[in-house]
Length: 379
Image 1 (cartoon, one colour):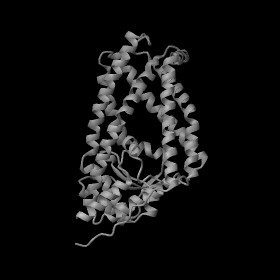
Image 2: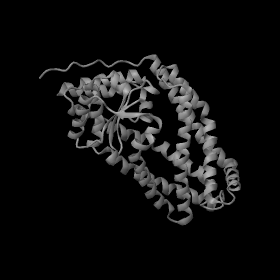
Image 3: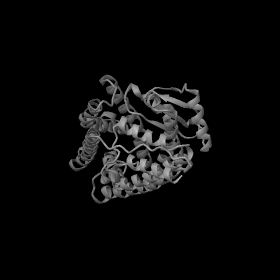
Image 4: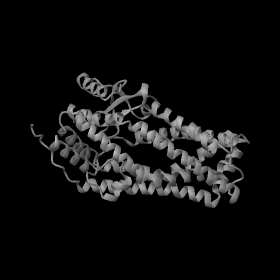
């Protein structure tokens, strides 16, 4: 059996470590600002003042008052987070990772705010409608409704949400398209097209994905990937993505999230009842001034479960990598693509153990490369 030439694992540059350290501190600061805002609103009673202001502006129209409250909450949050958002924008330019001009970035921020307001309004209006109509069982019904809503969003995202921020066009490289479609068919999934993703208009990073569900499932390849990677490397990247389909990771993740979400809604109901009936913090369950409390419960639960969910995600990623090794003729394109992605995206190949344990949804690149090398030696 012929031995495969293995690319040596490269070490992280000081620049990469600095960039990722700054990104982590920005994430911590962003979390602290959001968490602090929720606590301040509840402790000071300002959430009640915002509710009163919304009700006054809505002239006793409950649904309109909910919308105005959500609008004010999002604007306050956006203003508080704006310095960090701008610093993140400048950081990408400082490390030569962005092509986006300020005007384009600002327009994306506006579109993101408007889209977030639309989705948040739908979610919050539904939530308080259910609390008003079925105060005893709202959390069970809300769980079922929101689960269906988010599955629908996952299906619509490639055709409705992504194009709001990026341009897509059918891939013109027919040979590469044929190879990727054949790879998909061997994995037992049908894709509705292969698309070129114009990521270079905003970023110098590279990426690829298998997006959508059912009739909207499609392969998207960043032009930054198409311009700098061989067809074999792109095939290896997609083989990994198809590994998630083969191992039914999407379906399994839906069940995991469904269980967590059900527990989250139950917990939110218990906390909300305690706040209303025992602490008299709010007039009724349907008092939308308690929205920060519901968000706070979700935030704390997500934070506590983050290490476990990331560990589960890393397990899935390792399975997808193994499927890639089994599906391609050589693991060398996978190894070279990992190293090139790390260099191009300025990712850390070997982060600190606690960083990977707490924050990483993927195994460290050095570990993925080592797994590929081990596979090559044993096969």
